[in-house]
Amino acid sequence: MDRLETHAAFGGTQEVWKHTSEVLGCEMNFGIFTPAREPGERLPVVYWLSGLTCSEQNFITKAGAQAYAAQHRVIVVAPDTSPRGEGVADDPAYDLGQGAGFYLNATEAPWSAHYRMHDYVVQELPALIEADFAASDRRSVMGHSMGGHGALVAALRNPGRYLAVSAFSPIVAPMQVPWGEKAFSAYLGPDRAAWAEWDATALLAGATERLPILIDQGEADSFLDGQLKPWLLAEEAARLGHPLRLRRHPGYDHSYYFIASFLGDHFAHHAAALHG
Image (cartoon, helix red, strand yellow):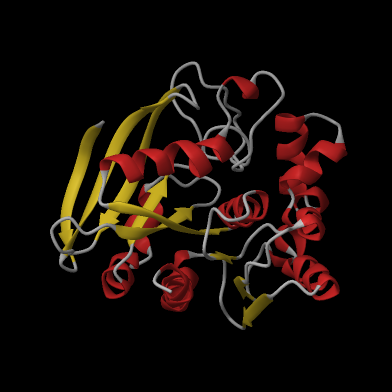
């Protein structure tokens, strides 16, 4: 690995590292904030998954997460949103290809050669973090928009791996919205049965773990009615008796101003589980 950045923040250290991912077949960047700790102490980890067009930079520079991570004594890891580089398939559109990995394992050419973001964020990256940093194996996952979709799917597909999950403005039913239909058609092909393995609303009925879900959604979000539709997951959770709290906030949009406004509540939600 190569360290690209290091910054003191809130008594801890915000770093950006580059490494070669065997799962993705390319170099990847990730941000990691480590709060002050005792010598030899290992801390639990919150994984943050960002949305369309983002890299590892958006969350670590805009959200104000370091203060909450220091307060709650958790490491925060923020990976990039897709494989990148020469030879990695791409598309001119913002919602497909590089910057739009959708946190799934693609099965269709040319995407299947590199686009295995689910395995990267669930398996490869945590293994690296727990081997090379002061991290324990107590993990949680949260994200925004496309990354909210990724966080929910990661938790639902991997019972026992995470102690908490939450999301801001997530794509909860990608099979039923244009962003998801476009991405799934490209990455997974025409078989909608295969799509259901990557759709949080579809996965909920088969969940073997009742991990409580926290979702915050801005009511002034321009994507709310067309792309996000959080009520679809909330209705399915109510039908199944799965614990889910959906908080809707008048006046808030899809931006990091919204995330920063309520991020403290999410860190408290995660810390209670991680330190419990």
